[in-house]
Image 1 (cartoon, rainbow, N blue to C red):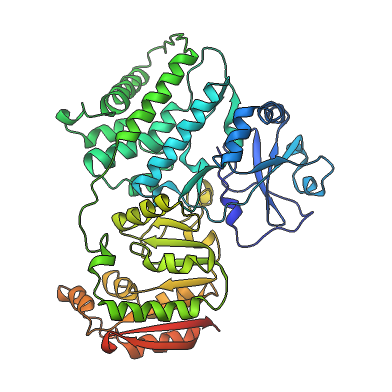
Image 2 (cartoon, rainbow, N blue to C red; image 1 turned 90 degrees about the horizontal axis):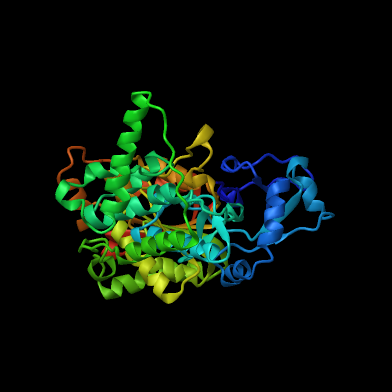
Length: 483
């Protein structure tokens, strides 16, 4: 099924111009997603249009729309000029969706984000099954976020239930949701690289390799990994032996399908992870600033952030989100990015508890950001091509990029300059204890890592509007505007 990654494109097509489907909108042949004048459209085939006419009259579906579980969706009048933006074969009916401000992918989510997305998928499925409907798939890419709240974006996934048929999306649900959650909860496996490496998810036959025999009886593993892995092995052997396929006609009643969904929901709700103590997951309590120095840093940031409204802010190297929360008071959306899973997990849990809608947590290593990938290298968009920030907050990150990842200072500053955004950036000098720790076991001593070289790189790309020393001169914070 398709994603709505196109809603975050920087350049918008002109109304009336010919439209091509979004690169990520091709898997479901019954509908396509398009952009028109900063609006999100979905063109339906004749069959899909009939399904929509039925679905849109269902009380359960209207309630899901009203609660925000499904992205806001409405049908356009056939005479609406926007319909002309859609190729003729998709004009049986044209829907318009509310715009999702930023598209993120499952390999950028924390454990609890993936867990809550899975529970939303099951909630929708149970609602469908209880009213004679079903869902043709269970792709994690069909779920996006409004702050800390998941929202389902693919209304083309709903279809009338066929009597006696199994839920065809079960295997995909396991590969995209359940198996990654089980691997993280039971084995503490970092599943993000696995999900990023294979957009189809993690197969049971691969997941079983992570579980010793004595752990295969753990909650959810036996039924949803061990048994399916054994079945996959039998099928593969049968194919190698060219044995004729045998299909058993099993009647799946509504009660059986509801039982499956309820059992999956129960299993997932019980899964959890240990948030072990790390310097970064407890950053707000154990950072290297004393209270007075931290207050001085916050004062500088707020003095510049409060001067205008920022539609989109990136807080890169956000830790547990102290400055993300500060910026959220002056912006529509803060994309909070850090490579430390547990720090971002804490941020997400805190935002979820507070009902936050402005901060989107993202787990990502900026020295190795999410690339464009999938079919034609464009099905899932690269991180820096999904939206344009108006402000980038980059505090205590430069030394990690330059010293830990060996990225030249000038290259990192040029990367920041590509976005034509204002920047608040902090430089940690060689005299600071954090830099000394990073250099301790480094053969390369980064002789060009100094404030003078950093300031020269800034001046070549930005206008330096303001700066201030922190921690007795061991750090320096800058406010920059694009040239």
